[in-house]
Image (tube, rainbow over the protein chains, first blue to last red):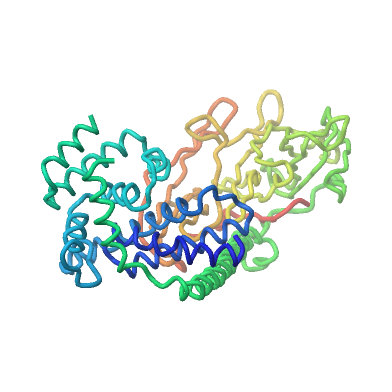
Length: 169
Length: 320
């Protein structure tokens, strides 16, 4: 990855990846930190001659891992600092944004990641399974649960949910 | 795609949009972050090398302290002082080539040898003689792993002609680092035992003991063995988290060998276990068992003696 490629990536893909990680973590600053760190690691790997098939997916997977690691470190602090319990929203969202942010925050971490990778980064279930080192069946199951929770939290119509269930069957 | 899927996609797009940062300002940050990582990696490499070097130097220092008895302790009357009753042998020692890989023949051995080492001691209990460690050579040269211990034994009444009593093969980790290292008298009976270094690591050394015994077949070299019937191995040396050694004490009124192990979690305070050795004669061997340990906690400066201190004799730290 040369500087031209890096600039192109930062211009075109970086914002969306930061958005994806921020949706999962609820924290824009830590999302930027994780994605930048992942980009640097991808840069170093490519300089060592390693091939990265899909830079988007690689950076996303590493950034999610890094934010997960950071989350584990924060768990101890959370016990003493209740205000850190649960993903925080940086700005003061209103309307739909607060609904989605709160609905996402209420999901288990894995479901949140699967939902964001699927709906926001447009990855397929097979790709998500590959990146998360799990089976496609597990991803579909997590996605089904996440979708049901989000639909419930966002008060989507019964028709929508029925469609969802029907499709999953 | 269903309406709920469309709705979720739209909602997530809306939710993420304000979070999108300015990518133009990011390149500099990514570049700086990469430079920081490179500096950190170099610093880690330097620190790792430093730790390895310090550990190696410390290990050698400990070994040096444990295995340089003869020169350092001359005239001090401690463990490394030769027995005052020792006089020069009436026979010459076997000449060992300075090139350890040179193959040579020795009277009394049916095979050529190489990598010889020797030490003088009262191994027969009747006066000075020489103990040896040799590697068995083949027709192709100094290339086998078979190593033996031998003691020069008088073969005439005047004691001027000799043959060899041979024991082994030794349990050497590597023939190149296997040598006769000391002539302690671990039980204080006036007859020296033969200490042989059988393994050398960066920080620790392992040695075994043999004793010459006279029977109906003449002189034989018998090993000190452990509960499993294997040659009993004694470890000397220290790492950052553990230390080992062996010494002789006479606290019970007679001399006995004590080996000890110590562990540490902080490099300054050590939990020490000392095992006095009980020796029992067996057929063709001397069984050596650990008695119940005594335990105590000490600082690094108060670790028990090592290097066979108190056992008499001299110690050498390499091949002759």
